[in-house]
Image 1 (cartoon, rainbow, N blue to C red):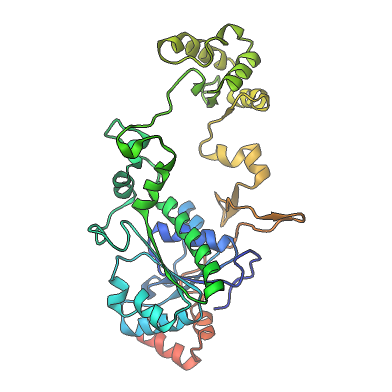
Image 2 (image 1 turned 120 degrees about the vertical axis):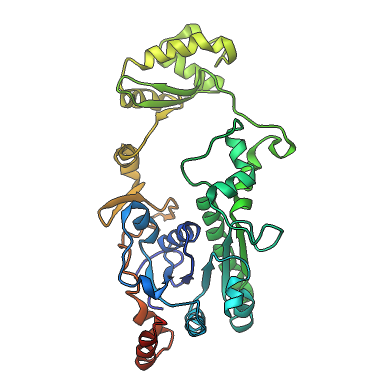
Length: 377
């Protein structure tokens, strides 16, 4: 496969993305940002379309696109030849589905022992739930993360949690497998469960798995306060040092003892702080209190994220195809400056790279013409 010219730590790594759902897209866009050449496989019926909207652009940028009907034996034969020119395959089908089609990890391991196969599924490759499908809420709820975040049911998160987390686990596994292959010469299967990934977040909770809910208590020094412009600020002055810095900055020495009150003792303090913060717009409080060790920050939403001065300086978002999307959060630097960047290449038209990808995999022009005529690509 001929890749786009991207300088990054994964430069030269070729990845075939067979996934159709966000977990795989999150994973491979991160790898593309790190320099990998990602070839996304789409069905021929989708040819000519282009990803649109913020989500579509954010998860499709920086990749190439090929059309192959992997539901057919002829398409599987094409996939095998593409895989022979690749380092990694990322797949999100249910366990056994690609094997039944003729090219899953067992077949790949036999024919291409150096190939790394990353399987991203809801419940993993084994266990009684492995054949069950679902959505982010399914896996977040099963994992215990949902009730760890808020035990008072019913409620549901309005953004995905297990999906991007599982994708990061998959990207980490791929990077580790590439290092291992450099040492052993052998590939492997990476088994990533979205539910397992979400459960892993409970590692930092005290006793959650033993049935003891871990909750950081609300207090005067750890809550959100509304400001004059109806925006909110976050106050996380939960330790004696930060609480003292906040009281000193707000000239409220009478609240120093007890430090950061909780329960009923916190109510008059909360009311007083609420009245103080309502006197100024949020950005003034952040600019004034942020540098003083008070753990005060902005509550950003929507365009606030893009326009935040720190985010602008850091390049936290980038513009691709006319929309703002999150940038690669991994910054690899040396003394000369940043070595890793975020791809701003627009999502390709689906199928735009079919001929070049097939040619690189050894297909002749006559073979490509025949595959197009038969609807395989």
